[in-house]
Length: 439
Image: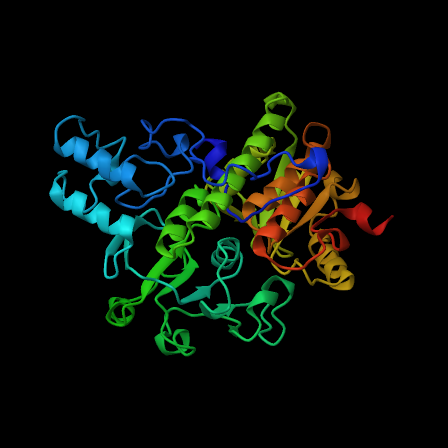
């Protein structure tokens, strides 16, 4: 996959002062966010971003508007031929033909007619449906659904319930300060319908895209019968900006969604520009350690993520990961990575220095014989951040000359502004190595 697509997962915003404002959104929040300038390669997911993945978006841009109606009418009138690969969303009902039914549907979408069933590509790259209007939601799963909902401007009036991480509903932390008074829980278990709807019946549940894998047909039917749309969120890889545009349409938050999609594109563009200056033969080697005990293999998304930030995965094992924990760590001595990156779930906005140091040392003891550890190139990055922001921090850490050592923090400040929360990014670290406690 192209690195411009793989790394995206996250959340965003606006504004850095002076020369640092290299990807300000001012003046372009309503622009077409498709970087490619054309849509002919839509079928290849490595070739597009900034596309609203809603059936009815006939011309494959960031809006559903009169241009889409004109596009469909042109096909019906045989003035334009329909390329199913280039413009699949012109077939609004996916019946294989473009006719008056498609035109009727897109006009309903433009007007946001109540009762209109919307077909869209969800976070699992499958076609889902939801019925307009949608407003009330449950956010299930930190780090993906919640962050994108924050970026799109959902408020406490729209959120019935949300997960907190770490698991302390009594103290949800800085990130959710705008949701004060909303029901917070330590785990929204989709398999438990009664618990999931205990705060009220939402229009939709936005959740991590892997958390419905085990739902039975009976469980799914309960949600369907209640009119609740289950919307898996694209959170860890893929075209997160595109998913945001679809979500923005569904919940009538298009401007926020465009700002987020644009931000994603510009962050990746900036990293691309920096890494293009580096020969691949000069990429540092990295062991990427995540999820408690997973060292990223060649089949992991982190394999491509590293390439996106100008680094090389040291893995020579296939699959998503190889276990790396205190009982299975001697194998790591066969490798000598330049860096060890460790994504840590609990590490975030309210983590104390003592707790951070304890975890840093606990994990570090498993790799203490590696040169990367001995030379302070063993790196913790906050797991509560969206993937795209983690990538910004790590890329600027290993390429400070090309990208700027403060790039991650600058991106983060933009993100905080988009979240609409009061937080000073500079007061707390989000990436640390051994030097952090030596200074």
